[in-house]
Image (cartoon, rainbow, N blue to C red; front, side, top):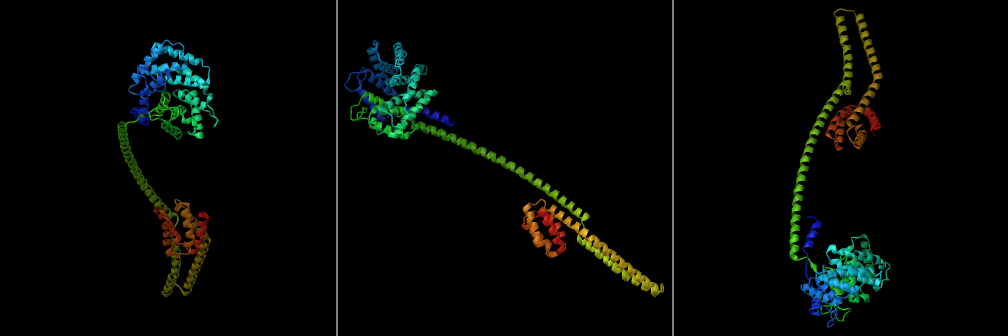
Length: 526
């Protein structure tokens, strides 16, 4: 059940009761009635049509238990008194129709004739401002009629909209007449606000009244009299929840004007009258004085509301748990897939490292291997001299060759060894720069490949500290120090293993070669 349905449910639980102020006013009206006839405006005065119509309407409005009895009596009295009267004025026609409405006797042909006479009377008013209250009373008369009967008031509503020029927008210039006329217009037109022109007129009228009250308040002498105060409050009851700071003082003032006999007078301490009492009862009733939501009904509705709220809460929790389970299952699948992909990446990395190692072994011999080859060449050459010398001495001793031949052979061997070393030194000196150049470039390329997966800032920091700390370290400390540096920079294991091969080659270089390689790395990285 949504909010609107809850509001409708609460509206259905509204019940009617008569508060103490209206109950005492109703008692006053009952005492003022002349048995079998109706009401005069004051006690001990003859029965008149206008106070009788007002009293019957007020009692019907608050649903007094004796309304039917009083309405039937008043209707009989009016039919006997005014049935043959052909010179009825607009106010008398309105009063007669009010009594008939209270008696639920509008279908009578006589009252249909009275309604037709009233329509002709209103058409003949010709926009007279003083007749605006009459037109407003005629519109309010049909407010409680069945919906199909209300269309007769549409011309009257249009007439009142045309008269709406009585609303003044300037502050401080409102007279009592303008306030009362505006109040009649606003209250009478309120049920027709579904028509845009009427809604605009009512809104302007309400703003006019509120502006006056904000400026002057309820302390004006005019508000010390019952009738104007009731008219303005009836107009403000159109929007009872708007500007309550303005309406509440007015309602309090109206309640304070009630006399001890239950009625209202024009102004205390005057005698209570039917007209002022019915006006005050109407104003209080239209502000909701007779409506309340009983405790039992409220408790029942609140219990249903709480039950619905608990059901919604359970559904929400169940939905939340289901969503959590789905999210957890998907997260597990994602983590499993991530582990599988990591395993594949690790396997591929190991394959790449193995292939890289093989490529280096084939195409990039280390400096240590070349150094050993050079040592082997040197040892072989040096070993050839004593071997040849020994062979010559043995040959001389056994008389295989003469001394002069042996000396010639030794001289030739020494000359050949000297020529060989001269050629070797010449070739080594001519090819060494090219070899070093190629080796250094291969080391630079290897470093770039090994650090390709690192963030730029990590690669730059590693290169900077390598140049600052690793160039002058002893060979046996360089490899370990550089690997500790990689761990400090949080380089992952994969990159760490690939760097280890490069660090070993770097550590095998001499100090000068490290510095040369450092200069190349500075250009390539920094």
